[in-house]
Image 1 (cartoon, rainbow, N blue to C red):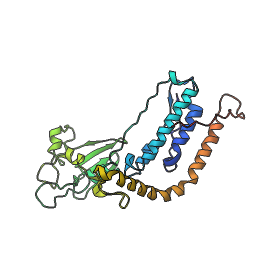
Image 2 (cartoon, rainbow, N blue to C red):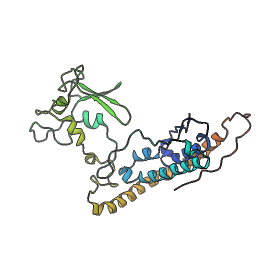
Image 3 (cartoon, rainbow, N blue to C red):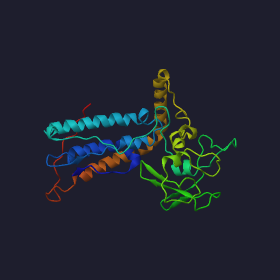
Image 4 (cartoon, rainbow, N blue to C red):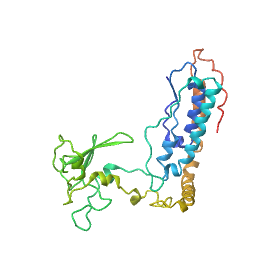
Amino acid sequence: MNISPLLRAYRAGRYYFDEINAEYCARYVLRPNARVMICWLPNVDITSHFAPRGQFGGARRAIQKMDRLVGSIFAMLEERNMLDDTRVFLVSDHGHVGGDTSINQQWNIARDFLGADAKDADADGTLDAGSGLGMNVAVFKDWLLRKDVDERDFAFLYDGGGSATMVFPFARSDSRDYATRNRLHELTHYRVKGADAPVDVVRMLLETDLGAANAFKGVVDDHPPTSSSSRSTRRACSCSREAACRRSSRRKARDRPRAIATSLSATASRRPTGRSATTRPPRARPIRWAC
């Protein structure tokens, strides 16, 4: 199996890893005798973690760049007479929610939902919109403990990287019954401390308003416009503000990625190829960019 290296210098990779990996893929991964060839292009995922409009804003350029690089890989396969005998699969481990009419930003389920205060401002026995559940949370060996809740009453959270599994005590937050599985009825009629009426946990998750805690104030509106007449204009303004917001950090990282790219090329050129250790393999032609 031939695979491009999984480089993890995220700050530099936000701008250059796709080009680095595509070049590496062209030189060392695309081989006629390889049964499986993998080329990893991480920039769309990396950029989406930092862009409030996601694929509708700062990540759009990364998507366009990836499209060009995939085209260049196809062109290289055709140039080497490998295209007819190669099956190409485009895969992804997950996507990003938001960006069009809501904000694409990080949200901590343990801190911002499970362990957040259960709010009932009007004292009607029903939790307010945007309220948390007021529970202790166990995340592996880490705990988020509240002073007003017994430490034996908790929800368990497993973060799988892009997905999360939550385990609640059966039927109510203080039942301490972790052996009985909650059915949909229990989750939509759950009892928590601070609320007289049952809570629909599923609906609370689905209706979470990320704009209520906008982490990008001054860069993007809490609720991006939904009208088709103003969407394109406002989107362009949002993209330009995102670009201005990233400009200073890009200047700081400008020299580092070039050094990484140079180092990778030098390291790859010294890679053993079955010849003597002092013999450098022939330099491959630069990758051809295809639109």
